[in-house]
Length: 341
Image (cartoon, rainbow, N blue to C red; front, side, top):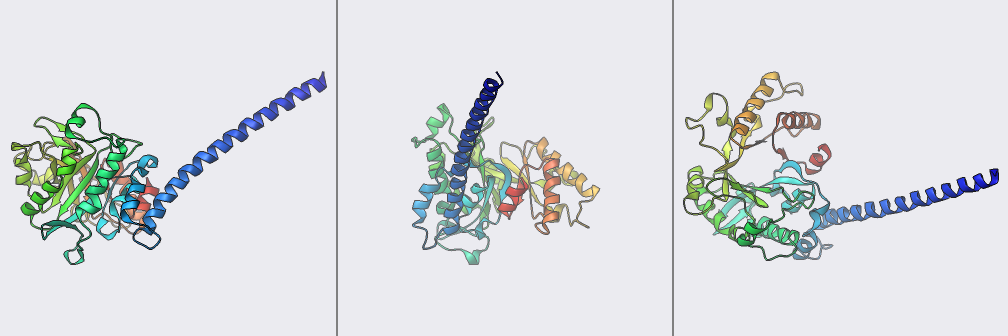
């Protein structure tokens, strides 16, 4: 009897061990498949433009479906002009907002923070618009995207893990506002015709995979009046400073979701310096008030010029901003943002 019980116990242990072994093998297979995918992404990004990299067009095909393993996070990728492939760098860590500085030059929109660093090959089309169309076409199973189709069935966004997220492409206009805005409007036509752009239909916002926000020298009066003939699909970056405190506009509905998405301000200018590595109670009070002023109007809050060094101060400010309700963090250090989140 004892021998029989011993044999049964031994059999159960053997079965349990085999089940654990199989489960472990399956976990390792899934993990390394995921890791290999991420490694492939970062390998492509790291070798972009070198002899080890075959071609930009081939890389874009390889990257067309890479976001299926990435979770979106509330970060706004800044200083993209300093990166060789800014769109993919930002998407690789899950940014839901990306900034492009543009200049109108010889009839085209060139990307760069400073005019003296512009090159004809770095255009808004090549760095952002064409890759976005490629990614979204792949995300939607290579369907023939169109505005008509978008009104009938949903179009999935950039991130497979959360396809309802609309990626904000913030266009910081550095050159003449009206002329640059007109060329931008023309270059957005392929995305517009494919039903990929969020728009205001006269009553409410219809969200699509890409939301365009114009900042910098963007003329608010032109953007505000654009809905007169066609649905508005270029929105304004409203001044956060004017939405709380003594600078409130006389027209309290001047900035609203009908014409704006973000309300933004320079952290350094508006909130000021941080002493001894901490924000003061009065600074936090002002942050809280500005966030409330924007959210009461249905706008998302974004600060630029937040501290980036030392990292302990940067993380302290990030932590407070997120807790107080800021919608996106301005990020220069993409890896640091991913680790922080």
